[in-house]
Picture (tube, rainbow, N blue to C red):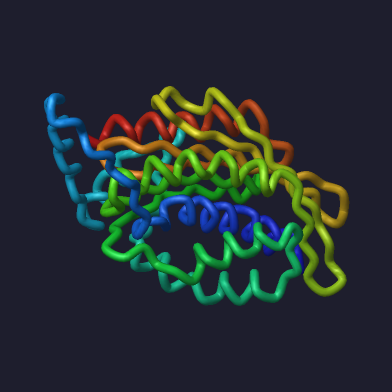
Length: 243
């Protein structure tokens, strides 16, 4: 397994785990019955359901800090990549085991009725990658519930070990505040130590606006403040476009 494969797994695996957080579309919350003397709270207005084409148009308007274009992909094209990614993860031994279960679940279970699009930029010179994804069509209650749940996943998978054949690497994840300015954003930083001792870091942030799950990532060798700023730039632009 070469460095590029490891780096690709780092980014793709984190994206899958992120989508797992919104994979609870079938989840429900128990609604309490209001006493007869209380005025019932009006039901919230349903969020706009964006089509994949509409989300693609939004992503095309988002620019990295250097003003270049993102390579845009729809959720249907991403679905075609699920099987190879699932096979790759299936061939790896991941500890703690529940972290692998989370990732495998995200790779194998599509979100029924969801639409989405992603945009990514790869800097071949530095090996850095930045991306933004918009997903619509998941019930707002499930989005909020699982967004909060992702924080506990950060704790559960704060320290991971992955082994494939004779190749072993470690990955540490920590919560990261201040990625962008969207209220309620959950941020994290994951640092993967490659077999040769080099560190590959990824900053990822999740937020919900108008019923749309927004995720933004930035990665590179020892990515830190710069990666957080890059992800925050993408996150803030995406949120401004969602009405």
